[in-house]
Image (cartoon, rainbow, N blue to C red; front, side, top):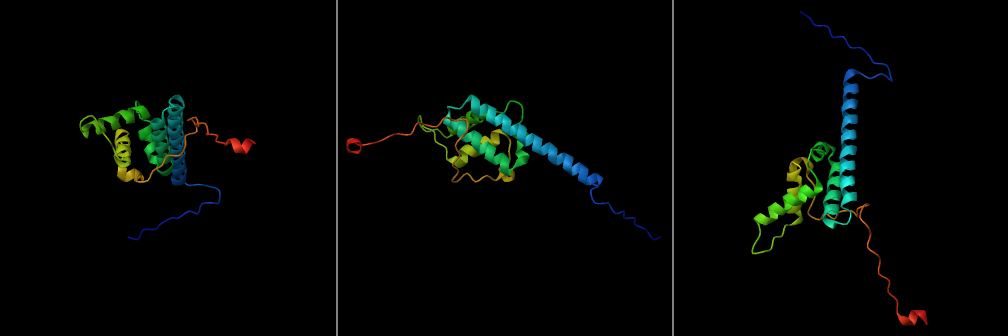
Length: 153
């Protein structure tokens, strides 16, 4: 028995059901990323004087740009930047010697990703030389002005 296949051409400007579904999912993902960014920015505004909150918040925003799929994890109920810092502290306390605990940037950012349940293989952030961008919410320190008396004479 011979099967006949029917292929229908779609006019330019029309989209098939698969394209419509893909676009709807893409729009939903973009909305989730925007919501996650807004959540992080709101926490940064509240904690704007804390440099570590700023560093972690900026790290997570950079992560969102490269890995939009992590937005859902950041949006999880009860997950905050401060909470990730507490998780990082617990990791450091396990390595504490006497009264001193130190984490490398890789260990610290891994603790943050683990707290948000973001798989490091999915995110694959480069934390070896990570230098967070300056937070828009954080105030800039005043620049120091130096001049000698000879310059005024």
